[in-house]
Image (cartoon, rainbow, N blue to C red):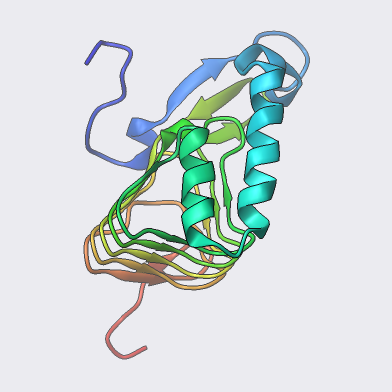
Length: 173
């Protein structure tokens, strides 16, 4: 670990690296400086194929080709999307489920900088349909994210979260 590496624990904001983009243009205008356009194009083509493939085996094989780390028995739902710029920052551990049309983002383009952060989905965790996971978030072992939730903070092991932003579900809910 170097001084430039984000800490191993803490909040997602502690684990997200900021990359300044000086000048008048917003950071999205600098994307070709952040990642080679041919790499992004290749990632995009592979992601489109993975999104529409009904075969879990083929999906996992394709996603591994662009750097996504997938454990044994991972189920990646139809239309689900890994980060197109930094798929290599995604780790989905054994027997986790990424539901239909879920999105795992490892970047945020802001006005004066872009940020990158690893997303980790723990063993046997579940991400519901249409959920969005932001950069730097860790979803703990056996945790569940409800459909259409926006995950802005870490989800502890075994916890169920829901909503925008996602919050822990109470036992009475």
